[in-house]
Amino acid sequence: MSANAGFRAELLIDGAWTAADSGRTVGVENPATEEILAQVACGGQAETRRALEAAHRAMPAWRKALPYERAKVLKKTADLMRQRAETIARTMTLEQGKPLAESMGEVLHSADTFEWFAEEGKRAYGQVIPHGQPGRRHLTVKHPVGVVAAISPWNFPITLQSRKIAPALAAGCTVVSRPATQTPLCLIQVFECLVDAGLPAGVANLVVGSAQEMADEFIRNPICRKVSFTGSTEVGKGLMRAAADQVKRLSLELGGHAPFIVFPDAEPEAAAKVAVMGKFRNNGQVCISPSRFFVHETLRKRFTEAAVEFTRALKQGNGLEAGVEVGPMFERKALDHTSRLVNDARSKGAKVLIGGGRTASFAKGYFYQPTILDDVSPACAIIEEEPFAPLMPVMGFESIDQVIEQANNTRYGLAAYVYTNDLSTAFRMAEGLEAGIIGINDPVPATPQCPFGGMKESGLGRELAHEGLDAYLETKYLAIRIKE
Image (cartoon, rainbow, N blue to C red; front, side, top):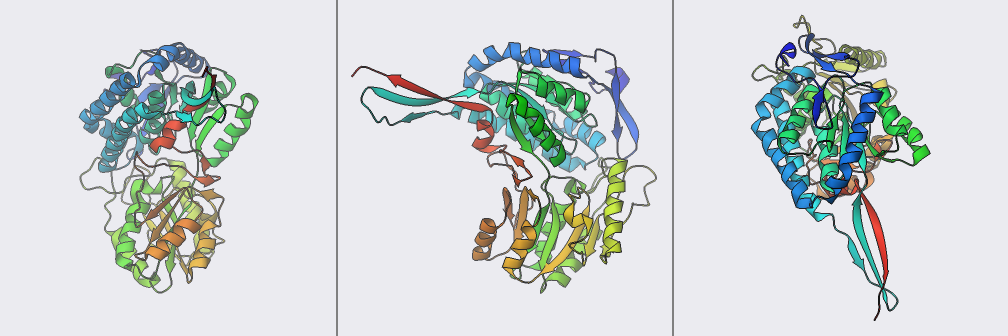
């Protein structure tokens, strides 16, 4: 650990912290300074196979453990995460770039997820089904699906893993976790909490390594019964195709392109404040981030003026500095992607109201100005592609039917946002929008007790809530004949 400035930088396989077999490591970069924080052990197919085998050996005992015993470990993990929240949050900001307040919120939200599933695991209920003939009884019981692979990206390095690990463990499954190689350090600290909470060896394993090698092993190895993946739609489709040979179970939380719709009854300044908060959280690098802004023509001028002022007031900088609200983007290619989208929009007539380029005041780091674009054409790439960037493209609309059609005109269906004070409008939008998550006057809707997931090409299944536990359970039907 001393060679990595105090960061643990090893894999966890079968209860033991270990280097990669080859000694290979991968550097973890601070996106605010472009400095290397640590060299983390980087495994591959062999380490993944050993982790799956360890999870397989640990499965029978963990499955037989009482739900209350499993709950104690998960609850203790949540408590330790809260006790160590400042350390874990600082690590997250160093390797991911988001402001420290956002990192702290992510750690505490994730701790709540572990605690919620500690309790929900006690409620994996079956059913007694009324019988239709004398001497017969019908019941269903729940059974853990088996060894689970948990794959997540870099933008929420703890939250997205917690939504997989916590329900899987609560259901009686064992886990092999694959975090993004760019942001493994804070998740390693969460795994230290799991170990210190008394999790038996092999029940949860962590392997940092090649995405392709690890995914191939997860898909091909029959020990792995389920893959839970958060990431791009393209990769998710590839996993679906590959999983078909073994009919391997999948949960997929994929891309999004969320509309944010402001109706004429709304207060435009209040809507603009909510929009700016929702858009520039984590630099727009959020799968449910609002990314297409439809504002009624009667409010559009006041909305954009207010949004510009709120955006101008945002403090950008290193996420460890006091008061910083917008950190760097995650990596250099994200800057290039953002610049391409802005240049494309400009070439098609969009007006840059604020921002529109790299932040010149920073000599180092991947900083891009929070940007608002007006008069954005549907032909712009930013309207077709998931931007994953600090860009707010604004368009006008005149009728509710028109905006429903525009909002649904995408292959994605993860989240949508509506700003209105009219209950009838709220219900019409809730029923008309093709999205798995709809925030009415709420830009940050995710919470452990409510389901999270999308429609169309935004994924399969749901995380969190009781649906998130069901995702790791099989239903067994028991048909029983008795004497009467």
